[in-house]
Image (cartoon, rainbow, N blue to C red; front, side):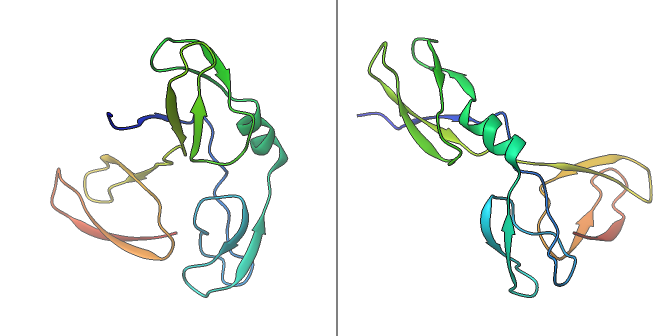
Length: 130
């Protein structure tokens, strides 16, 4: 049997900040723990939950439109038309950062805490904090 086909979701939970230390929380909904200070935070966003539940995705095998029906990601879906399965994965959020040396726009995945970035265009090194 072949590997499970994956389809990326169109919706992602908003980025949230820790109420204790102000750093960015890991992406997700529900009880999320800050990676910097360890505080537990409840993240809820009704428009995102509704969008995730009502998300319509085409079956990658037969292109029939399916409704996800849940806010959980990843979720395994089975197509009613062709009976094949696939996984609906969470959307990968990226942010744009301007390089202070050459003003080139870098797209990175945000991670809580402080990170050192190296610009591939001008080789300058700088820090960002999320």
